[in-house]
Image (cartoon, rainbow, N blue to C red; front, side, top):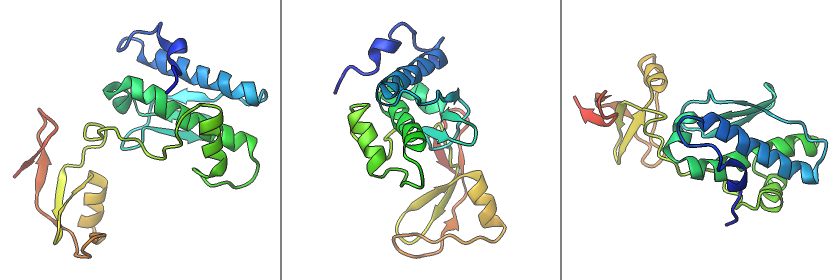
Length: 186
């Protein structure tokens, strides 16, 4: 593992300037990418992403979106993994014309050649605080936790089946504890 991107971001303390630290990391990734592709446009940065996703390259808005809840949980891992991951999407979108697979050969090549990172498709952050799923459903083999949206869809008639056992999921009635964020039985 290289020292990327610490040289660009060590001046920003955690907590009080976390968004500035994130933006500095994006700027560092942009400098690296422009060493290979000088005409690459700079992405705008938003910190408005919620849910399970840590980051998102949003071409329609012209930039990158990041999940600050996940960033605050593990800032060093977030900066060294998620920011290069999303910047690699940005590079591929602007450098390789036409339709390419989101995590295809071009993206993997950018991750390894420009950002010196393993081309991992998913993150391993704890998403319990970022994406609470307070509705517990059961099937024949395990428990499944639904978000409010999925729960409401089920209440309106959508039926969900377990991918493992094939049984229809049924509500067991679990709500989130507001103090700990943990799930407790009703």
